[in-house]
Image (tube, rainbow, N blue to C red):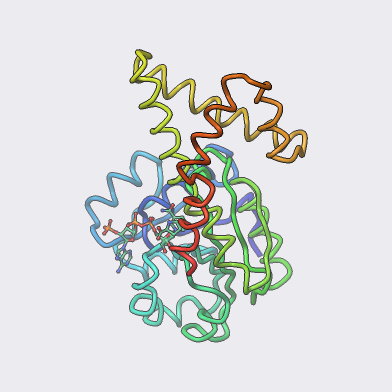
Length: 263
Ligand SMILES: NC(=O)C1=CN([C@@H]2O[C@H](COP(=O)(O)OP(=O)(O)OC[C@H]3O[C@@H](n4cnc5c(N)ncnc54)[C@H](OP(=O)(O)O)[C@@H]3O)[C@@H](O)[C@H]2O)C=CC1
Ligand SMILES: O=C(O)[C@@H]1CCC=N1
């Protein structure tokens, strides 16, 4: 059984999610580039992405699966049923980590019965080891494989184990919300620019404010409502902005965004 000292990890699909995971493993030193492999649809474009990271590019899924111990399935969800069954034989004695939204343990048992798999949904901040990785509690991994996978994923951020029926919403909150928060950063940046702050300074300020606010909540465990109250002086400036956000339906807009995905 490999350990993080010698494990070889391969990505089937090397787009935004897989490259973020590779960057996190390389940055953390947990899996160096020379133990990371990838295959994709367009080989030449893949080579550019792997070479810059010191990784191996494979010309096919078969070549990739043969070369590695752990296979990360990082293709679009609708492609899984086309791509994986052809690799079933080669995948039989590998550890499979799925990152595809909507693919849980039951789905994998259907297309790859008897294989060793775990279903997860990471997010793009894994690239800097600040991710959230939702993991289905139910897996078909052996005890040793589960330990290795948790060590690998733990290097990328906070691992949250959930029961099968919660994997979808956990994956949505962790996996999709970076897009929503990036929109918040862009919007506040626009507001800052409107009042004369240069664009680069605006994003630097706003992103640090978001990171600092999140870290404060994590460090203190404070209720977000109490954090908001602490900023709103009676008759002050912030409460005017809070009232405007409520009038614009800000809370409802976020809940509707999640409903649009989960509903
Ligand atoms: N992006 C995100 O933030 C998150 C994504 N995910 C999940 O990650 C998975 C990948 O998403 P994402 O990275 O955004 O998608 P991308 O479109 O960025 O990447 C998809 C990759 O799959 C490759 N690919 C396409 N067809 C094949 C094939 N037949 N065999 C092998 N590789 C193939 C593509 O190659 P090429 O470029 O050459 O076409 C590309 O490298 C999805 O299942 C998604 O649900 C989960 C959480 C967050
Ligand atoms: O938008 C998507 O399909 C993927 C799944 C989770 C985040 N991004």
